[in-house]
Length: 288
Image (cartoon, rainbow, N blue to C red; front, side, top):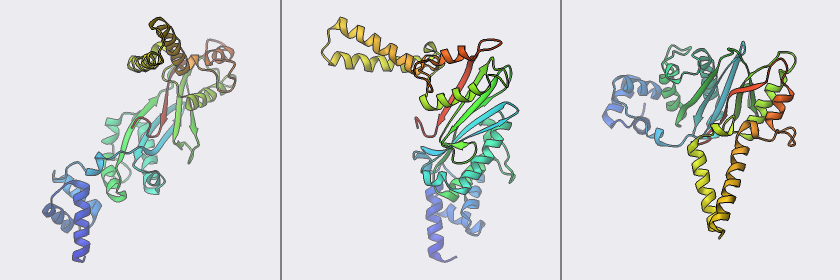
């Protein structure tokens, strides 16, 4: 390796790990210039600090879902750019994580300490992938839906591959009779992906979100010059509309705006009432 190549690698390694010049040179000498192995070497020595890259924003990436025997897992892995989200190494890493996530039932703590096919832990493979690709990559969130006394359904919006996309929703229903009203589950999952409800019912919407929305509404109405009495009346009406539009059961059904989701559930109930037990919706990068 030429002096220029060595200096370039030291610079790259220092940027990735926050480690000093001397220790980076030792690591590169030990690993014959291999950047990925150098990162691993420094981590094992307890020298590597948090990568400077980890302070950057990762709001791109992929969401993945896996279904087997009626159980469903979902996971989101983020990158800094959409370009990396299309990288084969990144995609393959995400696919492997999706398989592991299903096995460990969506427990991120277990996920990080689980061995992958190459014998290394997920967290170590993650560091190596960051070193190879040169971007911040994070395993953001995960969920698991068991099939105990319920049926689970999912929908992938604009899938880039089977069970991989930018928006994925999963919903658990009680009261489904296979072969009769089974298809309604997929439609409700599609509705959730499209309209992004905050909760199943109005009462379940996060109180902090409700308080913030009311604060915004009141300020808007007050600034419009309305009297205090009129402002209070208008604020209540606007808040009621917000709650209705953001709770699943009160939302207008995406396939027939004349009906609410609650109406659709009643219409499709058979042996017992059709109920939504829980749901999640992952939009890659949302809220990052």
